[in-house]
Length: 338
Ligand code: 13P
Ligand code: SF4
Image (cartoon, rainbow, N blue to C red; front, side):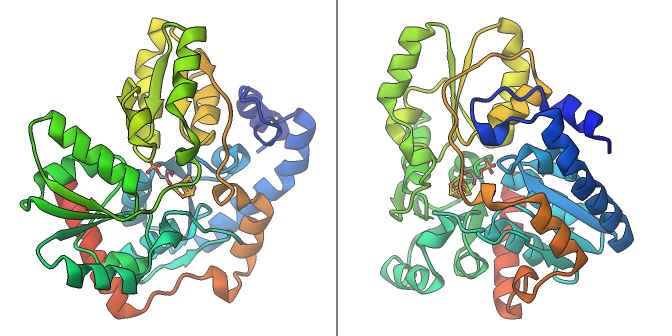
């Protein structure tokens, strides 16, 4: 890859944050590492899966698949590569390993936490199960392998509403995102479906920051704006949004609706805005830029080092009985999402 070809893509990103902007000089400094990673991928028959929130130099420089959690788990199921490198957050790399026990899965991120995945452990789920024996335990994909193993069904932001609707039990315990659980409950209620959905009090520190007042203010400035929100946002925010969806659904929606020439407000991490700038440059975006510190801890340098010679903590290893139970929880999601 030449610095010029990288710059051609990255220069379209006009999101107002220094970490999202690229000069030709910056692309020149990144090109050697990108080219080394591309060589290493071939040598090791490796594939790189990256979430939309990681830095655009990873998205457009080295990634083979970029998308939301659901699309990336599907890509992990389908790959024929021997090694999966997953520069995103730990639970995503763990999910790839749950689905591919015989492959080498590498997480190069030195800080791959997630405020949702870190908010609950297996013991807490087991304690809650004892307390609510008649509830179906549904976990968001943003959970550790052990929490998935202790749950019945997994969901992602792209299928949570429909899966909660389909589950043949009116009593559901949803964890760990309290807002997503409440949003799902409200969505079902609007469709005339009453389910008892208990929620665990976790939240995403990025999405929790969006406030309904900010939407009102923005609508005053841009009357015809289209507001698109991620289901991790608070119910008061969701109530004011025109569209709710996963990060991939948000981008697809902008692609479809940009012909209307109305401005879009994206209530999610700034990676979606960067991808819209690069891939749908005619779409006009309004609003600020919010970054997830965990996703943004990924770097080309760490990917290169991990591909060259992974350190033990970068190699995902899951205890076999946990892996098997977590795989069942994910398989049920794939079944329900059909
Ligand atoms: P998506 O599956 O919609 O990409 O969401 C993942 C995530 O972590 C959002 O904060
Ligand atoms: Fe986790 Fe929130 Fe970051 Fe998504 S944006 S990875 S939910 S902390």
